[in-house]
Structures are given as structure tokens and as C-alpha cells.
Image 1: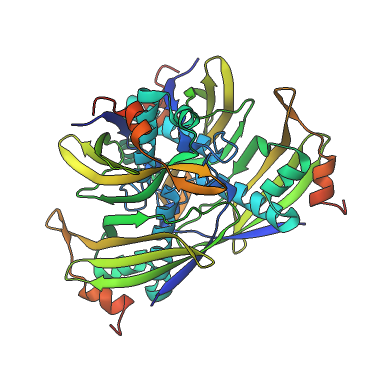
Image 2: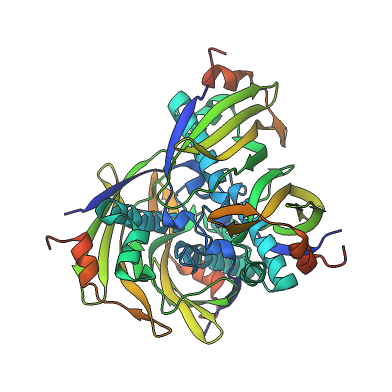
Length: 136
Length: 136
Length: 136
Length: 136
């Protein structure tokens, strides 16, 4: 069950000399999809960090696989799903499809970074969950 | 009179530590705007190059100025205009606005690169003009 | 035992509004490290593909984690290691350090993409291994 | 007379499906060259801004032309020159060469952005000039 879909039109400049998407771009789109989701749900990263006293909702771990290449002119739908809330982490799933064809599938684990007593610490997820996923 | 408008949602990852758009991104958007315009008008860069026997519609010269910063959450409208057809070059204008505020204004000069007798040459613009701008 | 080290000077433009490296950049550096390794060992991606009749040494799967943030001014050493040769895949490990501090640790699984009978197929790794890692 | 040279190894991922450098990358390199120059001369952008009470040394205007393409494997030398100090702007010249061949030539006009009375203003260049170019 996807939470949010970001449409991406694959352009010439997203592709490399093999004429397929240069892979780091997929992670730019993962990140953009997450931030757009934050904007739609709770006013965006900046407002959420201000409310929760956090420095950022930062990345701890990420992975992806690429079952099929995407090329210039492809219209990709990138779907974000909330996979799991843990005490101090949130796991997000991503699937990008061109029509019925999966071109990227991956996940991010993110934490809430809070500056406290001069050190950066991992914050509790509960207040972020209440903002983003209140029905869960 | 703009020919084509590309909407851009400014995201966290487009911005630098000063929290404004990292300027090379504007040129990625200029290029994407041009390629999307090609797709809408005449089937895209690849199809046009195949039809005209060209290797690319490449950049010769570019410039931009930045009257006002754009930040995370801004919705920018990037408008492409055909400014001038010369014998062997096409000049494109770009203006990006957030609401009524201009955040970027610039132009690109592009040529048609054609491989001939083992050398790259600048091709005539007339056939490209017939495809992209037939009423002009 | 690392095979190749790429030095990266973290610059202002690599960082996001949280003033730490925008994470997709780490994957641009993984990819650049791999291609630079190919150039040092066997003449580069293009020459290797020509010799092996391949379209590319493309990515199948990638992952990374980020134990500590990197910021503007940091000098990162990115070390590539060959982790495993399988029949049709190569696994590469990456570790990026700023001094003794690990800022990124990850891996890529790559395959040899070969066009045959109108389809893209995964090629055997043996000839690539002979070029890149003859002593193994 | 160049002030600073940044070597750039053109990699696969810097290039587009036409197998030449995707042009926005040149501006990432202009910006990186400038920031590296700041680091070498006066401790970097962050330290300079702290000393001068500025928010950034930001871009006002930029232009470039591309006399010849650069491709994967090219070693480019990017030379920054201080072209002109005005009261409230600094003009920087850039020239990128692969061997004797010029692949990019351009310039940036930058200003010192200072927050004052709730507004962003252009600061005087004299204190920046004293830090970066004391002999001029």
C-alpha cells in the first residue's frame, strides 16, 4: 500500500553514455520523493524539524536493485511506502515502475537527528509517527 | 511569448548549505526543459537526430543571472522561449519564476552537430526549424 | 585489502541544507571510483567493453550505510575492494573514511551486459576477471 | 595569470548519451574550483563568512561557452583567475583545458550577501579582497 507517488520523466541529462539512467539519480529521486511526502503530510522537512527540535530526518542505510533499465523518454512512477516504524528508525520502501515494468526497488532507513548536550543523538520516532502516519 | 513551461518543485536536495538552490541545478533544468520541449514538439531528441542525421543538438554558449534566491518548497515555473533562429544556431531564452518573482533568467545557444567526412560540423538550422517552429 | 583508492575533497556544493553530504553524491563517487579503477587496470570501461563485446559493466544491486556525516572541507579516502567474483556477477566493496572515521560503507553488484540475438544478457565474468584481477 | 588550478578527471558518469560531458557539470566544477580556492587562500567559505559577517559569497551572474567537447578519460585542468574587483562584486574567470585544447571558458560574478535589518544586502568587496587578494 503506497503512501505517496512521485512522477519522474526520464530526460536525456539523467542518462549516461550507455543511454540508461545514471544510477545515483535514483537516489536523488528517492530523497525527493520522501521530502515531497513530508511536505504533503506535515508541512515539509523544515517545519517538522522545527516542531520536533531536530536537525534533520537523516539517512542511516539505503539499498536498491535495478531489475530493468530506464531510458530517455520513460515516464516513471516512484511509489513510497512506509514499511516499518521502530523506536528510533523509520524504514521506507520505494518502487519505480515504467508501465508495469519495475526499474528500481529499494529502501531507506532514516533516523531523527537531535542535537543534545553538544552531541548528535537518535531521537524517538513516536512524535514523527504521530505527524506522518497518525492512523498507524 | 513562451513556447513551453516546465514546472519544478524545489526540493531539499536541490539546495546547498546556504539553503538556496545550488546553481548548477538551474542548468540541469534548462537542459531538461529543452529536451521536454523537443519531446512535445517533434518526438524527442533521439528521433529528431535520427531524422536529421545529427549526433546531437548541442550547447555552444550559455548564460544566466539570478535576481533572487529560490528555496526548498518553492514552486518554480520555467518558461522556454525561442529567441532567434540563425543559419547555424538556435537561441533559447529561459525565465524561472516563483509566483511573480524572477529567480533565474538566461539563454542557451545551440547548434546541430553533424558527423561528416570524419569531422564534426555545424549543420544548417532550417530542417530543425521546420520541425520545431514551422509557423515561424 | 583495497584495490584502489579515490581521494574526494568534500566541497560546499556536495552538501545539503543540513550542511552534510547530500547522500546521492556517495553513489556518484562509488561509480567514479569503479570507472577510475577500470582505467588504471585495463584501459577503461569503453576499451574493456570493446574487447569483451559488452554494452556495459552495469549495476544490478547497491547498498550503503552512513555511520557518520561528512561535511565541507573533509578529505575523504574512498577505497574499492573486490569482494567476490561469481559466474555472472562481481561484488565490489567501498569504504569512505575521513581520517580514521568511516563516513560511508557499501557495496555494488555488477554484471556484464551483452547484447545477443536482440536481447540483453548477463555475460560470464571470467574474461573480465582475467583483465581486472589476473592474480586471483 | 591564473590564481588556482583544479584538476578534473572526466568520468563515465559525467557524460550524457552523446558521450560528452553533460554541461551542468562544468558549473559544479566552477563552483568547486572557487570554494577550493577559498579554502587554500583564507580557510574556506564558512570561515570567511564568519569573519565577514556574511551569509555567503553567492552567484549573481554566470556564463560559459564550449569550444570543444570533453569525453570520458579526459584530464581537464580548470584554471580560476580573478578578473575584476568592483565595489560590490567580484568577477572570476574560468578556463578548462584538455592538453592544449580549450573545452570550456566562462566567468562568474559573485557578491557578498549580508543579512542586515531583516534584509539581504550586497556587502562591500574590500574586506574580501583583503583576504583573498591582498597584493592587488
